[in-house]
Length: 93
Image (cartoon, rainbow, N blue to C red; front, side):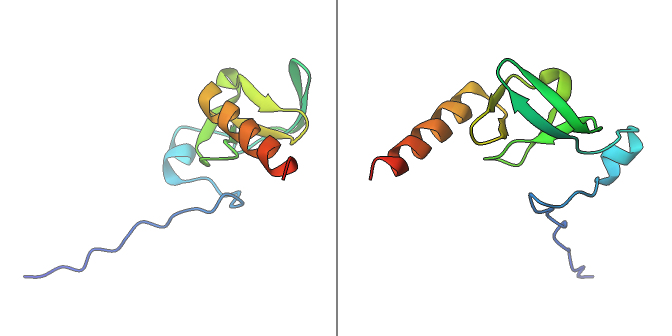
């Protein structure tokens, strides 16, 4: 018997809905933040933000890398560095 396998729905970066695992774990959803020098201000409560480059969720206690200028969060230092380098390269063209 052949079964048709459906691909899972991929959420877009701008999709504010939570997936079933996030609901199951009782997460509040995506937060909105204002990024400042050395700290951030919570504009809308939530448990996580999304990496501006990869789209992966970053729990607020784990958030370490962001750009004040671009108002973006990053999952790792490497992603932050590459994004910063790409933005600077575009400006110098």
